[in-house]
Image (cartoon, rainbow, N blue to C red; front, side, top):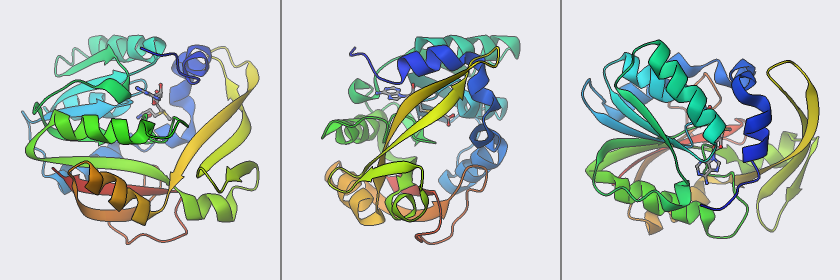
Length: 238
Ligand SMILES: C[S@@+](CC[C@H](N)C(=O)[O-])C[C@H]1O[C@@H](n2cnc3c(N)ncnc32)[C@H](O)[C@@H]1O
């Protein structure tokens, strides 16, 4: 497994990751994904780039069997600890690289939310590897919920970030906090997308795109894609 620029950031933040505002909408996000993908208790969900496990834990609370994969061992350890603290046997976690998922026809649904690996790498082709692995992991007819940064929004509103028009990657210098509250300035890179690029990328890996909606953390819904939301939520079927 290759090193990833996010791993030292995850090590630094630890449990402080779950204090960020963008992590506070988990229940609403899972409500929406469960309803939209038609998930029921006993279904199996793969959570790609699961972070500290917040979506997988919420699926498991609803009887949905969730397996989270993340490249950060620190985040995986936090997720395993949280599942153990709630005795949530339906949530399991393992360190892994989303570019080499290695599952075959195993899951009823795959979620990749809040830039969970997708959009977190800058090399050409990395996101295509993630999408290919997610397609292979799904049983035929299985469904995907994937969020991606909205390129239009990044260009229009990210005043503190530099947007590379050639690669579609937004670069920002920002502050992160450790568990004890210490601040550190770090670099963040996020791959941004238009709906057209998302349709082309997913279509090339065998997905039928059912909808691309304008969303933001904690406010997932079914509104058509616009330039005005920070993220898009892609709903697709294998
Ligand atoms: C912004 S966090 C989102 C975490 C989680 N999905 C959430 O909604 O809170 C992005 C996550 O993607 C993980 N990640 C980035 N690249 C990855 C890769 N190649 N394979 C697996 N995980 C990766 C990071 O370690 C991080 O936990």
